[in-house]
Length: 292
Image (tube, rainbow, N blue to C red; front, side, top):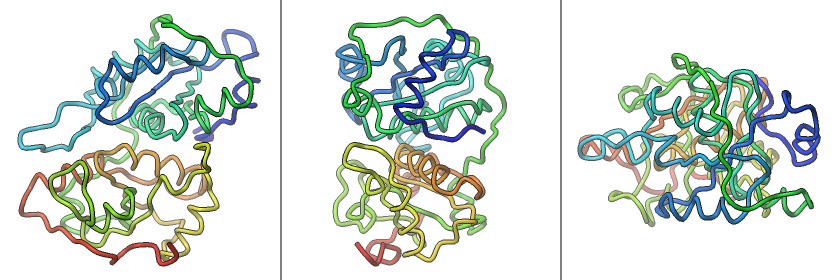
């Protein structure tokens, strides 16, 4: 597996190389609730040269089940994911770099889904489009239709945790909640109908692990892990609201602890957990960071 992150200078150098070895660039610009048209408009207003566009809602997620089962962003089928990645230009023979505006939330979801289906030569641009522009690198406007890729997705290569595994306590390591502290504590819930967290989960808010420009800060994850008493060599299970921030925490974890076991994702996350009223809900500071 390649290192999960690539810096702006590293990507600029790779893009200046021979055409057959250049990475396939994929823009995953996305904000929750904005819809395809608004997200795509951000891409059209400015993107990396020869970067195709991949829509998170339609390309990286399936449809929620009855009564919200599966969560707001369940895994896409292998057929739907294959079509989405090929339309974005992803091929078996070339490395892939995903990016979004700056935080890498959506890019991390694309990174995780592609790796879940067995493609390992994939990285995320640290700091995204905003960092690329701030560093004076070239960019362009308008749409771009990349040559259709030929990527072949395979049976799952990563572990996808189900709610039953959490409920029965058979996880290999700790359960980490990647949402903001106030959502974890149950003080506010702007998206889902029930506030709180899964009992026993520890809170590692993934957006707090970033520089102000969106680049990862591994030192903050190391400090959070130490604060919570989590062993970096453990194999944590990660969740959030619907599997986007959890993918970002997985990205940060693998960039910070490359020699540790890969974390697993509960992709349905909180929005799936609360779809069954029989599942327990906790509120408060039981697993919050002590040094907030």
